[in-house]
Picture: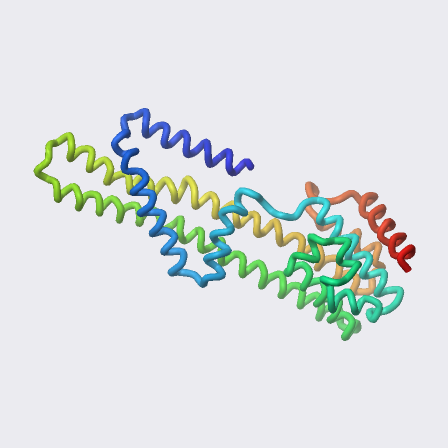
Length: 291
């Protein structure tokens, strides 16, 4: 929401200033120039990236407005889920959570944390880490290295989309110049017109340069920067899971592992220790009644 307010403010001030300073003729050419420059920008995005990266870059514009998807309650759900799985594994061995990690979408344990279960990156990291620990608990560094690699790959893939948006922002001033040159060519074809007509045509042509610079530094560039922040913020969820599971693989008690993971969460998203403990207790009691 703050990003949307900022965008409205920038557009209102810039285009309001254009109108009030006598840019009425330029405003008439605005739809054509926007279509020209915007279409060319989308074309450069498609040309320079794979379909998956281009699609994620387009979705990143919306993510810049909506922000990171993880909230404090999601971090609490993650800690409760990991605590439940670790306690089950500690009490009954890894065979007791085999069904959970092999079929998480059908698992009652994962069903208690639907936002984590439905996120492919978080779900895969958790299941793969437990699977590796079950195969060889004598080498906890193997599972931790795999988690580091998974986080790096996930972050690297998403940062390609961020870089793609930055590339579009860098290209927009040049595309604006192209649009301006096309306008000048059109004006030169009407050189026999009156100065008033030529002045309006030249002003419309220069609108392309204006739009290219404005879109680059006033819209797309800031949105790309914000999208990058969102990607990094969402990666904190994976880092929290890595910290918690790495501690468990080192032989630390599940309760301490959960607290280590909780301590790694930023203060504004960190759930209270008491809330996590109460939620964990509720899950344990629900499991005993079901049994």
